[in-house]
Image (tube, rainbow, N blue to C red; front, side, top):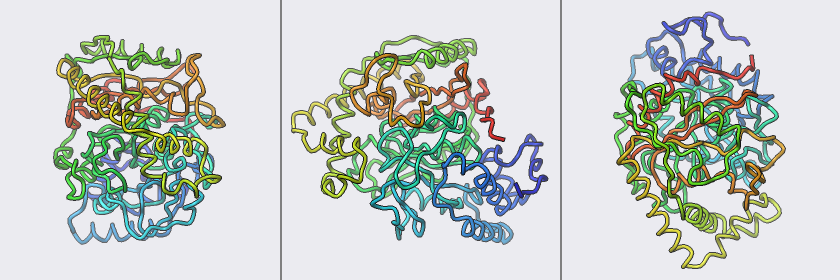
Amino acid sequence: MSHDAGATSQTAGSAATPLHWWTARDLAAAIRRRELSAREVVAWHLDRIAELNPRLNAVVSLRPEAALQEADAADRRVAAGEALGPLHGLPIAIKDLEDTAGIRTTYGSLAFAENVPEVDSLVVARLRAAGAIIVGKTNTPEFGVGSHTFNEVFGATRNPWAPDRSPGGSSGGAGAALAAGLLPIADGSDHGGSIRNPASFNNVVGLRPTPGLVPDSGDGDIWDTASVVGPMARTVGDLALMLTAISGPDPHSPLSHGDPAAFAPELSGDLAGLRVAWCPDVGGLPIEPEVLAVLAQARDRLAALGCDVQDVELDLSGADEAFETLRALAFARGFGPGLAALRGIAKDTLIWNVEQGLALKAPAIARAMIAKSEVFTRVADLLERHDVLAAPAAQVVPFAIEQEYPAEVAGVAMPHYLGWMRACSRITVCSHPVAAVPAGFTGDGLPVGLQLVGRYRGDRRLLEHAAAWEAASGLTQRHPPLG
C-alpha cells in the first residue's frame, strides 16, 4: 500500500491500528479535528480496495479520481470552518440497487449494465448531504433477488473469511467490503434478510430498522413494510452514526418517522437484567448443527453476563405464507409488466417469483394480510414481557460460492430458493426493528450471526442492547486473515 504509515497512530486508543480498522466515528472525528484529511482517509481505503478487491469482488464501478477530488473539496470545507455533516470525509460505496447520479447503477442486471441515473435515490442524497464520499458501488445479486451475491454483470462476490464461500446477500458486497476493511460504513437494504444474512456471514453488524425510520424513495408500494433500507458497519456505534444521516421523515414517504438527533449520542447499554426471549429455531425451522452450537455458546455467555434468558416457543404460524405471498405480489407489481423482456436474461428464481405473483388470487392475498397482522401482534405481545427477542440470523453457515442457494438445511429439503432464508423472512413479517450482530465462530472459523429483535420504533434502545453485547463479546474486533 502507498499510504503513510504515520496514519496508524493518529488518535488515542487507535495506536498501531491501520486506518481501515478504525471506526467511522473515530475517522469522522479525526477529520473534523484536522488530525486526518479526508483525502488521506479516502486514499487509504482506495489503496485497500486496490489490494484486496481483485480477490473479493465486493466493490464495483469504482471512481477513484472523482472520489479523491471530492475528498480535496471536503478538506477545503474543513479548512474554511464550514458546517460539516456527520459523515464528512468518510468513504462509502453504495449498494448497486440504489440510484447514484452520474455513477453506473446496474441493479446486477445485464439489462441495465450501462445505466447511469441522473438523480440520486433519497438515501444516497442524504449520505452525500452528510458529507460521505462515494468511491463506487457494492455488488448485489440481480435486482437484489436471493441471499447470495452474484450476477452476470460483475460476477460473484467472495467471503473474506473463506473466499470459497458466499458472503450472503443481497447486501453481500457491502458485508464483504466492511469485513475486509475496504469501507468503514455501507448502506444495505433488507426484504427477506438482505442486511441480516450478510452481517451474519461476514461478522459485521447491520440494522433492519422499523419501517419508515429510513425512508425509501424507490418505486412501488409506499405503504410496504417488508422492504427497508438500513445501515451496515463493523460496530454498532457506527450504525447509529449513519442513522443521524439517513433517518427521519420525508414528505413523500407516509410511513417515515423518527428524529435523526436521537442517534447522535454515544450508545450506552447494560446487559445485567436484560430480559431475552431465546428462540433458536425461529418457530420450528431446521438449523444446521454448527449454527446451533455457536448459538448455544452465545446463550450461555448472555446468561453469564447477567441476562435473564428465557427459552420461548414463538408462534409464527402464517409468517411464511404472509411473506411469500406478499413478496410474490411485490414481484408481480415490480417486474410483471416487463416479464417478457426479462425472460432469457434474468435468472430462473426471479422469473419464478414473478410468475407466482401473477398467479395470485384475492383470497390468498387477503389471508396473507391477516397473517401479517397476527404475527405483528404476537411479537409485540412477547416484547411487552421481554426486552429483546434473540434468534439466528441464518440457518446455515456460509455455503460454497458455486451454489445458488442451499437446497437443504440440516437434512431437510427446501421448497424453493426462499426456504433457507425463513429465519430472517419470518422476522420480516413482524415489522419490528432487528439488529444483526455476531454470535461467534464455528470450529472452522466461519462467522455465525444473531438477530436481536426490539420493540416497534424502539430502534435506539435496540442499538443500545446490541452495543452492550458487542462490548461484552468482543466479536466485532476479530477480522479476517487477509493481511
